[in-house]
Image 1 (tube, helix red, strand yellow):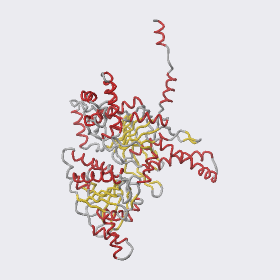
Image 2 (tube, chains in turn red, green; image 1 turned 180 degrees about the vertical axis):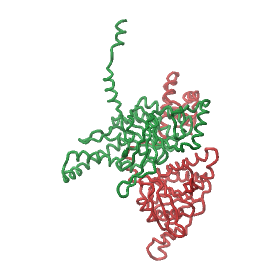
Image 3 (tube, chains in turn blue, yellow; image 1 turned 45 degrees about the horizontal axis):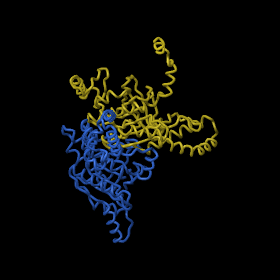
Image 4 (spheres, chains in turn cyan, purple; image 1 turned 135 degrees about the horizontal axis):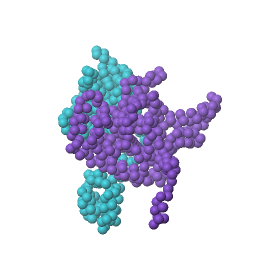
Length: 317
Length: 318
């Protein structure tokens, strides 16, 4: 965080008298101000000789602090933003779309949980192929499971028969909307997400093709290696990853789809990995499983903001 | 000298007058499902419960009761007519669901009053059509009284609290209405000095702007006889030396492990535990609403309230 000395060029009120006074109370940066009691500080400033300057300095820092948080919104503004920006994207899979009531929502984290080969990556690829027709998609791949052939197959199924050249052009256009990055550890993911954040900050407001879908396949393979040790670093990394994804989803109007594995729970049943602290981070959680020997998959709602949990459906990919 | 002494003995107001005054300025709030204990501004209520146990829903219910007016264009809505502030640390608030609930409450109150008058079928339909623009105006009025902010980390939260005083003053000037409810969703920071700073800021704020504070907290419920209890007992022994933890008296058996630091624990005046049961209330053809249990831990009441969540809000079962 900004040291007070570095802020002097921008805010000449924070000169050396103010800084010395603050230093005498153990305050060297704006963050220290957050933890200290400002009323006591103002009372001390009152007793000082140059109380006016000190009080101006404190007021200036307060206005800097005011910029450090998100803006306050009232209910109508929130509702307008939700109606204007937070659309719903169909996944392209009928069973899931019917279950969720139209699809996955922009601004929310949807988590797909399931044992291995329960169709999670397939659902992601299908959703990516659906959304990429009109918007950009970012696919973060941790296990080399991204398959352009599969996406081409999904697109080929839905396109109306036309000339091979038109088909090719369409395929080119849609495929160029999907960018795939391989990340193999959590720090690489943070890197990519921060770059994405700066990119989106420039892009927002400009017209044209906007990014609307972010897929992380799978987040459990990034977080599980750091979890489980006796230190709390793993849990802190997991929570900050979750909040970063939520921030990206809400502020830049992305729908985020994350994949999680299952681990053994009590009584032999399987439960989602990453533990209880992760449980509250995604907005919706869907449990996928596959019927042995057939092509049908089951999906049930573990948690959803507006649907009752326990509702289930079947689908075919 | 004598007259001075006598002046001390003259009463300012009788006890009844004082009670009248206090009850009008700081009325008791009975918010279902927290209706067993009347709450007043200045109280700090902590709602604890495992995840997805409708804690946020109770907060939203309280917010809607707060922002609805008591009486508007002849219809009684039973609200407080004040603003409510919601600090979302969980970043999971769904404004569409909030507006649905508000609409349902408005329509329920409007329908309730029209059916009381006892009109015929077509009369009530015409009245409903006439009420629609009123409903939208009322809806907009209420939504404008609901203030919301998201905090993605603890420094944003502290920054919000530090500048809240000026924000509240501004609100008072603009709307002429006081903020009466401060809702904090999910307190889960772990740094000692951050939580002390937070408690200090909220305490200062409550001195100048009396509000009812409701905060949610996610806990993990252990089985009564599981290892959680052992670690809790161990903490009780070591609490004597450790200045940072609080001596929880043995009659205040908490069924979950308390992880909030002492500063916050002593700040809270009321504690509630909510959890979901496995029973479902089969309500109609396809509506399966889960039943939740609510238990008052502070002040400890020996009753368990059952409630369920419906479109119009919380519905008490017993």
